[in-house]
Amino acid sequence: MLAFKSGDARAFATLVSRHRQPVFNFILRYVGHRQRAEDLLQETWLKVVRSSSEWEPKARFTTWVYTIARNLCVDSARKETFRATDSLDAPASADEGTEGRTKGELVADEGGATPDRAAHNARLRPLLERAITSLPAEQREVFLLREYHGIGFKEIAEVTGVNENTVKSRMRYALEGLRKKLGEFGVEGETMDSSRTVAG
Image (tube, rainbow, N blue to C red):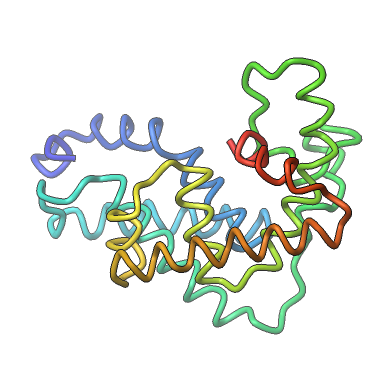
């Protein structure tokens, strides 16, 4: 980011290549609609360019870019309150070349899962995505930033503009909400404890 601020255009390409996918995944899970997420991702990078002079080295770039993305998501949610959105449980479109998979699965990463774990995750993931979608927005964003993107509570507090204790409280309520919702879906307690593997 310092190089980009100094006029090195190639540095911007490096920033995009490093952070594009995780930021897109966060936005998509936040808004639940692929086209809106792509639009918001473009807005995020435009804002990075326009606001580059405001960035200071004391703030981590990841914290700054997630703050921008999160604020754009919040603004978009306010504007789109009454518009229907595609569920992450919905089948992926044929042009995405992923027949039989859901939109939520397109942003998930199996990693090096064993066949048993992959089968378990394939069953649990759509339920987890539905449960996450059902959370209040302030709990959902904390859960996504922490569990899907590995951001610490202190940084999440900076991203969301609330204190660290509030972030931890929202995380606790999110986990309780997810446990309750997954219980309604028939998912056992120990399965819920393994949901971080699914989230990762």
